[in-house]
Image 1 (spheres, one colour):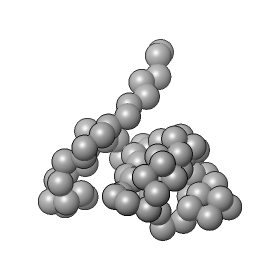
Image 2 (cartoon, rainbow, N blue to C red):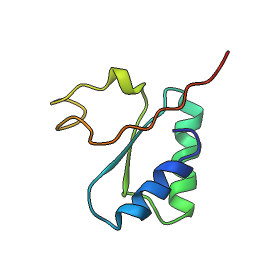
Image 3 (cartoon, rainbow, N blue to C red):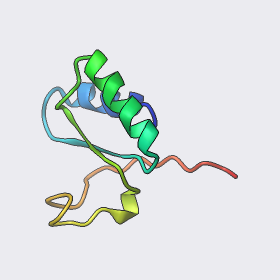
Image 4 (cartoon, rainbow, N blue to C red):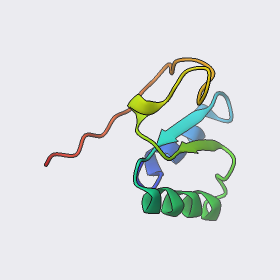
Length: 76
């Protein structure tokens, strides 16, 4: 999820409908993302998980499978 830019863009594009969930495994980035969302008035509109997307569990973390999934893969 990084700094949350794409998550905030998705939330705005949805116009308040649906839910945006963002996954970020690096805790310092999660804290930064939450600060960025708060400063942009997006707090509470995006659910942030401090884990990788393949670690989410349906019925525990999320209620159902996602309709859309955007993935960024960092080249090493």
